[in-house]
Image (cartoon, rainbow, N blue to C red; front, side, top):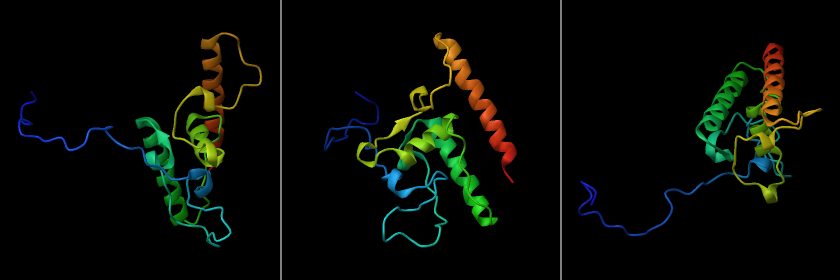
Length: 150
């Protein structure tokens, strides 16, 4: 029925793909740097950074954003600077915080969503106003964080 696949043979039916991910809460720092928290862990910081689906982030924007953060931190490492992590009040910061701090036994991939942001001090009752408040806090915190970087 599909042109070009007249002679295709389906060996096994199933899902389109399997979401494979590492145990990020045990293996990564907030900067997405590999830093296992085991007694046999490396004594020196690793130059290895992870991002995207492999760390447990879902969605194109989240995958791209964690890739950008990992790239920035790899460049900072090469320049002799400490790696950084955005504030958890921002969506990128919340995603990174989730994948690096979730209870390991409960860890599952997560997509960007308001539920992983820290609660507002005085949340408006109106849903739209609450979203605006989250957005404003994130914008201010992200701007302050950017200005603090060397």
